[in-house]
Image (cartoon, each protein chain N blue to C red):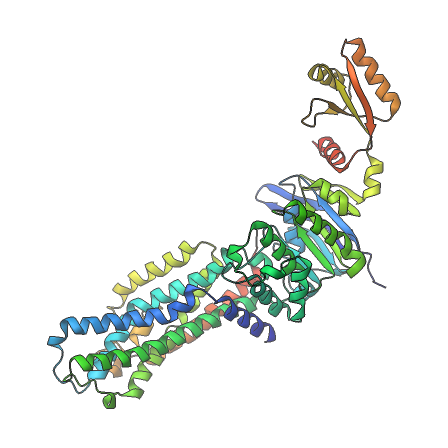
Length: 305
Length: 255
């Protein structure tokens, strides 16, 4: 039985770049054995947070606990249990895929057989002896994941791991990440801007926006907190949007002709329909959906804005 | 210690298929080839018998090696070694591994030490070969194999190598500290240009890191060479810079 519930725990984690507060008093709680999706728009502070968790930059304020113990750069031994892929994979183009893994294997002092295992797990066995400079972006990304898995980590930190992968690669990655907690006891901390991807693999979600955590909890808790979405189709969407905004509804577009309106239930749908009819706007679609992660994410970030 | 050895073994692996490994051979070869060609072209004025022909020949090669080629070679090698980490964004990966950060600096420093040592040995070996080749063209010069003053020539090369330790410690630090390869190469080129002026002064030449190797054998009277001072500056200075580089690496922010 572990002595800690949260494999990553931060307390008021803060980091500034000049006058810009990139990460502002972030309290992360990543449960042991979870797949934690760390979401936020570009520039929200995701990568800065990850860099602090890995000791690559120091926080200006706040504390980090990894594996239940205070983390500073002085106790780097803790990285024996951590695998990480931060942004683009760090590879030596003059070496083969296998040799790149050998570099990290020697530094980890890991068994040689781990190389074959991780090559197999990312489907790179056939190309292992090719020079990395001839790899496609997707192959480089898969090799980066293999590097992160090489020491059989207890905590895997992945920053945008599906970058450059084709749909089949994304599917494989999703399956692999989903299986890691149950099959190998690995906790995954996953930062991504692909909300749909996170929704399919994450058990817990953290949303960061403009350096601040605006939500943290399980996926179910997140879905329970937010309002259903009314998908509305009408003949004058621009006019309808303005009318509804003036009436105090939260309306947005998703690039399609229809409108998306946050509602509380069927009665709101009926009310909206009535309001539009009185203005001679013809409504031809009204259906209510539970919000997906993208809707929730937009609701949160718009609320913050 | 085990961390350092792990990091060093990785440095050896990373040399595969790089220009760095070829430079070990090319730089000494070029210096000696140039000297051989120079003797071929202008040898008519030098081919009288000289009882110290090997010392004269060895000193000439070593002058070209220490004044020009060695500082530029150290600059290029250190820049290439540093750039292999900077260009491939390796620090964010390496610093998230269970190794103390100082071990990466220590491993790079040791690798550069090895590369320069091997190049110095090649320079010595090629000096013997090019001297022998010159002797075949001008048999009266006295560059016969049985006349080689092995200990004197080896001693000169060894002293020049040891006097280069401060120089390559500085360049190791610069190349790992600054991401831009222009800083690494630019600093070396400026230092070499300055050394062309500094080398004319017996006082400043024995203090300036880039002229120390040359000053180990450059004095008109060998007895005037402040060898202890040169060695002390190079070895102690080199150690201090290396320790500072290791400390600095532990403080590095990878933004």
